[in-house]
Length: 121
Image 1 (cartoon, helix red, strand yellow):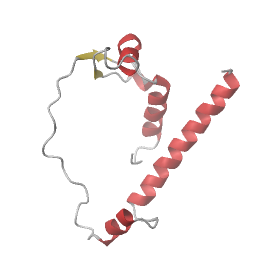
Image 2 (image 1 turned 60 degrees about the horizontal axis):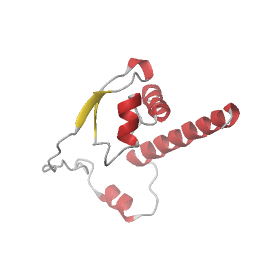
Image 3 (image 1 turned 180 degrees about the horizontal axis):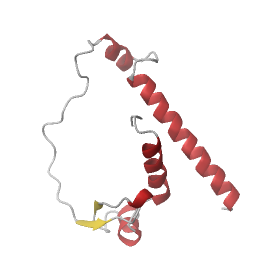
């Protein structure tokens, strides 16, 4: 893929991400509510009732291996756990060899979160 097409693709990805962020924020603030039952039900709830519910029981997880990620936007690094390569050679393999899966997309999301601190995902 040539650089110009790649740059256009990245720009479109960022624009779609920002549209999703703004749409989500508008729905959260109640300024826009399409005609689907879930949205209508949320508007009918009282403002003091929190629609989010805490998950109390989670399934047990035994990580195969945990590794440090590559350095991301603004020096962000963390630990991420991967699956055995025998069951997930693409995502876990990329994380193991390069320190990230789709690093460019992760960096775009980190930049968007940094720029729009009040956005909701």
